[in-house]
Image 1 (cartoon, rainbow, N blue to C red):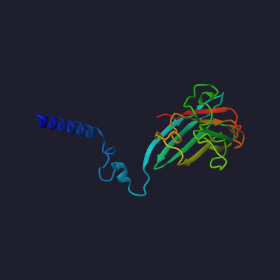
Image 2: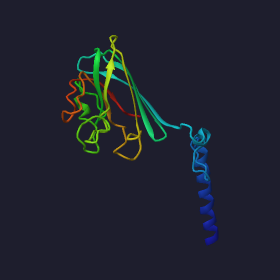
Image 3: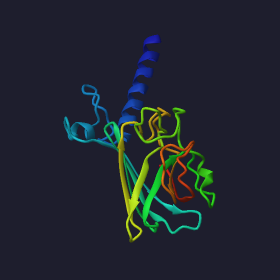
Image 4: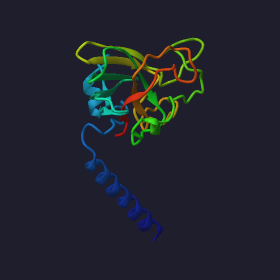
Length: 200
């Protein structure tokens, strides 16, 4: 009787495993020998493997006309943010990641302060004296009100378990002014004129 019971349990486990594997796409299945998915294997050594990609819409705040898109792409161990924005005043503007994915307030304050999971002072990215994980910096806007930013770092991730790196449920904020990289806690960058929630 015990042998029959064990056989029945093993058979049920095999059926469940088979069903689970059938529900996975070929790209999601992990090879038991290489521990890689088919998509990762096809990329080949040294090739770029795109893990996650998000595209967000910038929403105007504080009576501005800001619009545009922000794209985050995680490739291997790095995240690249690309922002293409219009409707801004000519000159330099600050852009940061803030701690809450909440753009509900008309002035953008619902997004909270700079995202700073390591509890550093505000500063220019890479400064030995400290900087926030959300301290992206400044970008230039032309006479047509158009500006773009491309920023790549291995200190961010999209949806990983490391809360010091995970950018999900944060917000991208564009400011009317320039980040001076020294004033605490946010660089004296001025009014929040654009907001985008980083959500899947």
